[in-house]
Length: 272
Image (tube, rainbow, N blue to C red; front, side, top):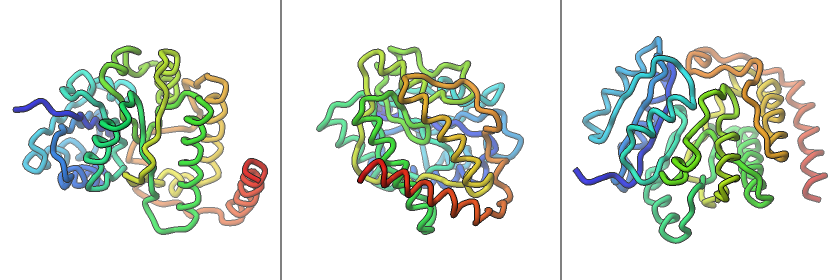
């Protein structure tokens, strides 16, 4: 079989409900020059079984099981198994648009990047979700414009040579493994580039389940070190895994309104 151009590497933990959406989106890609590697973090649900049911729809599908759950460990495991020239690290709760592979290949051919990511769209039609996703896209753009290190966790596309040059992800990181990865690439002269097209759906399930204010506080704390070329290894209260999203918590609307006012004031200060 011809060597795939892309290796789509998906770390997963208790994702039997969300992973099928991502795998289904991969099965209908307009270009097929990719393989899919699911790396399970020893899930307690049916994630592995569900992933393997896509073997007929995704002929180049490999399912690995790690002895423990760890994002950087699982991503590195996938990379060691990968045969593609390019690694696409995607979160298990994302969904790729049907022309995702086609468009990132065209971008590579015309821009010759080493590290890049496209724009995201939210996983709902809620205006607040759209506003927050826009803000996240602007933030990622700003790190590229101001030449700050970043390799966005939800979706990172990196050339094999760049990945190998920094030894992959640091497995000591339980948080900010993506920021640390981007920082080490940055030190090698490899900076994040942006493909200015919306090519994947970003899941905002964490915000709905744990509360927008709590998650935003974690994200804001996580963002600050980026502008000082640093990263955190731990974030109190930040837990990974699809098991967190079996039930939705009711959001405190009054707290959200206060935060929204503060966010709008900040945006006016930054862009006016």
